Image 1 (cartoon, rainbow, N blue to C red):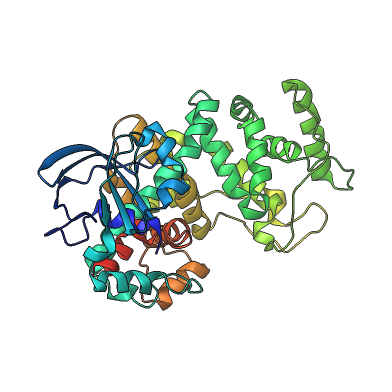
Image 2 (cartoon, rainbow, N blue to C red):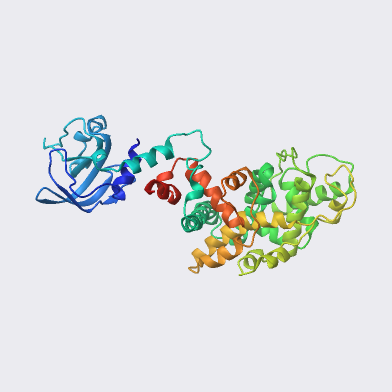
Length: 423
């Protein structure tokens, strides 16, 4: 038994309220359980109760045992002077406030159904499970699951919006610059995402605009800022880029990068940072106002057309500067564009629409539901539990469920957990 379960019981009045009595035998009638306090101080503020014949308005404190009142030194804390009811699972001692008056106590275990207790114990009894409800989640009503997934998806967007808003504040709400930073991070993938992101953050976007007349100019700028042009190579294109970057260094008074942190380890050749840099350069040489285009209410096929970019000619026969390879036009794959939409375009659009006061959840949902479901270990395990994903909407919501609810044992704050608890 944990204290947060007692909070849950009190908040939702999941106990027998008829003939509810204090440990001294006084009848309790609840008009309002109060508002749940997530900060320091009593657990519930402004409850309205009738104890015996007296009407009260004040605070409620909850503990597993009555003696926890003294363990937490509440008797000397003035924040607890207005506690009108002490709700506990087990009453083991009388407690008093600062004026030495006995505080009425409700021993909750006498008023909770065995079924609810059994459901709680079943849900939390085996922490070695992948998720607590894995044996029962498929029994939850489809309506409950679908509505919860929609809420989880928007919770995920809200959580991502915190990071995006911080970037906007640092750039004085330069939306194009923030889009560039986020796209650069995505182009770098997990292996090089941080390095690409730092490159984009450190580079004034006004310089990107000025150099966007040529894909090669942007390549030299990006490669140079990533520290990938510091060596001497017997390669004409490498030498061209290096000379161009040396000119850009002086022109824009940039700082020479000492060394590169770029990695190739365990990457498929199509995901090599060299290829992704060239494609990113191709994207920004093709579109001068990419942010405004991305914010239009487009269908998926239109986004595929917008991001139909490829590397420069040199990279059609290379994956690295050193070794030549069979010729291949290296365009952004639809699966890669899907990742850009999931991780950058849709979250940024969500923040932008909120910012201008025109957020319509349907436009966001329509786009994410057009995208194919993601494939990863978490989604595979939900599939085994018969929680199937038809689109990226479900997979994103399920990732949020697993990482932000299941992994943190927040079943009491989960609609699925609530449904299983209440039976």
